Amino acid sequence: MSIGNGEKPSKINNEDILDLTLRPKDWNNYIGQEALKQNLKVIIEAAKQRKEVPEHLLLYGNPGLGKTTLAHLIAQEIGTDIRITSGPAMEKAGDLAAILTNLTEGSILFVDEIHRLPRLVEECLYPAMEDFKLNLVLGRGPMARIMELNVPRFTLVGATTRLASISGPLRSRFGATFGLNFYETEDIKKILKRSSQILGIETEEEALHTIAKTSRFTPRIANHLLKRVRDFAQVRGEGKITQGISKSALAALEIDELGLTANDKRILEAVIHKFAGGPVGLKTLASATAEEEDTILDIYEPYLMRLGFIALTPRGRVATRLAFEHLGMKAPKNLF
Image (tube, rainbow, N blue to C red; front, side):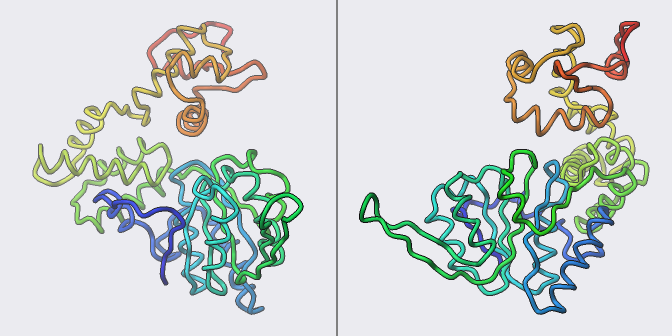
């Protein structure tokens, strides 16, 4: 199976290589998301029996939950090539045409951040998804004409962190939409055990549990933390990740026992101190913390809400009693 990329080639660093090494290569090693995996297997097997390409699939969920890995596994299960690009990389219709016309029959086209497709590119994608045809406008004004191109039959796998940002017409053209959930701590531990074996790291069970609890229920973050703790074990220990090493490494990285970073706490403290616990709107909170709105929405807020530290109200974000208690502050009596 070959892998193509719709973006300009970039230098691959050691961290990227490690991430590729840790990526599951088959369904058995893809831990978690059981219901989603079973549904995908049925869709793929049914298409194979009918000798058709599977329907277009839309995957949504927070960063690091495994959307890209699933696209690779789908291509492997079908036994076809995968071409990888992203919404922002396709700036004009010609970019889309170049990618689609270079696909092979039955290929997987994986588009990350599909909610960021330019409007004109998205509209050109509609006939390609439905009829495997491209309608390109050549020229301008009275001399303009439409050229129709046939493209190989393919399966589009779109990935997004913002399902609501995808237009209705595009969303309706996917045959199935699946959401990826946050992982349970036990599943994260299994992922860490597998990663430790691949990286050749000796670890203690308690240490893996500590790292899993601080992983924000996200495999990508868990693997990144494992590699950082490994560095501390190598430099300050004897190479083995012990409970003591894991705790001291996480403390040095300013990550607490629930996985909150200094930036998470800064956002909570802003809501509590600057806005009396809330409610506060997104724009105001972003200005007060010098963070981008998208970063708050995609990175910090989902985890803080998962922990029950922030609640969304019609008037904005509110810090909960749990947030006050975690930060060692006394919560107002009327707080929920």
